[in-house]
Length: 125
Image 1 (tube, rainbow, N blue to C red):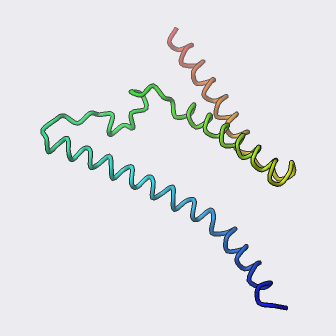
Image 2: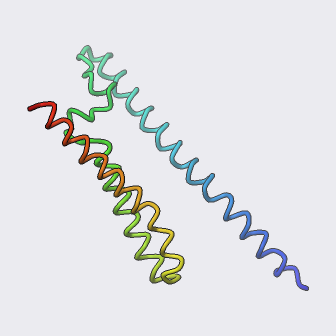
Image 3: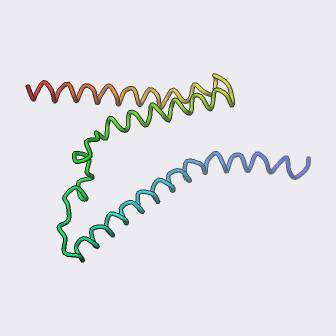
């Protein structure tokens, strides 16, 4: 048995288990940079004597008109659809079926968003 045949499964195992950790690390780094940029903007506004808008602290979901549940549902639907198409052409239908998980999660989030909108409309009337 040559050395390369032993190395391939070891590298595959390391890559399989390190990919979720790497994705989580990238996400956490992105969130950290966003928070750092937000604090820098607040500091610049304070130094220049301008008022700091409350939307910088609340996440600006209401001011931008975007509902986080709606955005999350669309994101999951699009990512799941793209993953399904990519996996279908790369590995076939058996593997592409894994992409149905984010599609189903997106559909559930979309239904929850519709129900919350219906509740808001009913309470408003």
